[in-house]
Amino acid sequence: MSNIISDLQGKALLAPLAGVTNLPFRLVARRLGCSLCFTEMISANGLIRESAQTLEYLKTSPEDRPLGVQLFGADPRVMARAAAMVAGQNPALIDINMGCPVKKVIKTGSGAVLMKDPLLAGRIIANVVRAANLPVTVKIRSGWSQGSINAVEIAKIAEDSGAAAIIVHGRTADQGFSGSADWDIIGRVKSAVRIPVVGNGDIRKPGDALRMLAQTGCDAVMVGRGALGNPWIFQGIRQLLAGEKDCRHLSWSDRQEIVKQHWEEEVRYCGRHFADRSFRKHLLWYTKGLAGSARLRETLGKMTDSDAMRSEVERYFRSLAAAQAEIMT
Ligand SMILES: Cc1cc2nc3c(=O)[nH]c(=O)nc-3n(C[C@H](O)[C@H](O)[C@H](O)COP(=O)(O)O)c2cc1C
Image (cartoon, rainbow, N blue to C red):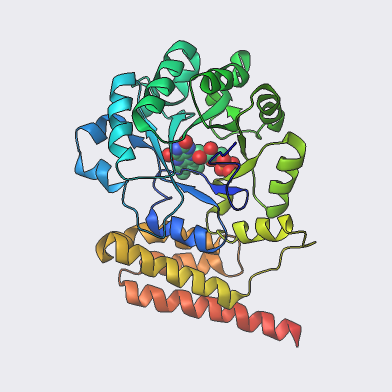
């Protein structure tokens, strides 16, 4: 039977990441082999009020396909109205956020707190499925807390309510991002439902994706923090899935080119003023742990002119390439 997740070309998805997975970052990830990208979580309430800031999160382009739009909300009717609005834009799927543990979200009754109310969770999913007329996925945690692990129960409810797939982040909500992700729960969900299961949590290197697929039997993997400053992780996963023994390392000049294109895209889609600020975090991620990056960060921190920043970053990558060439001669 046709299914949005099992029919994908490839098996690695980019996670919804608030403040990060905007259109420019998604385009970069796609060029490097990501199979499906998600918007960051979008407030259903904000959407139906047509708040300009919320509508901004829906910004997309013809190359930004297939796209999952993630919604959060607690009222089944509001979620249905928001889903119908989003469906008008024709994304590949709508995802429902039932995993966010952030106070601002859970105090509205949305996100991970819905795992404590399976009945309401089911009503929300059924309403969104009915209103969207598109595949609907649900992103959950392993449970609210260690004492209430109920991912299997919620996954079954999602399946019965018409969800097309379930995405499991193997941490409890009260764990936040601490500790390590429990991949066993992903395997347990996979054994309990017939719809595809996407595993999520702690994929930092391409090899981790293959381990998660093998260990849990999940149908696809979702990469979050492991893609920050490292979008070529998707290329590595593709190479390993294609049977290559090791994934090829990118040259410094290839990395520099990716950073340059990402930055240009950020300016094109967000405007120069916004990009000058928003791209700084990507620069920190792109250079994290590299030789001399602390000094680069210090220098960039004092700079306000983005052309000068660009030249500094280019000079930095050229110096890395030169140092490597010296080692190899
Ligand atoms: C900065 C940041 C923003 C996030 N924003 C979202 C979000 O908008 N929606 C969501 O479902 N999860 C969000 N998450 C959780 C990730 O999608 C993912 O489930 C989590 O980071 C675990 O995967 P990882 O170990 O690959 O990072 C966010 C995580 C981070 C670090």
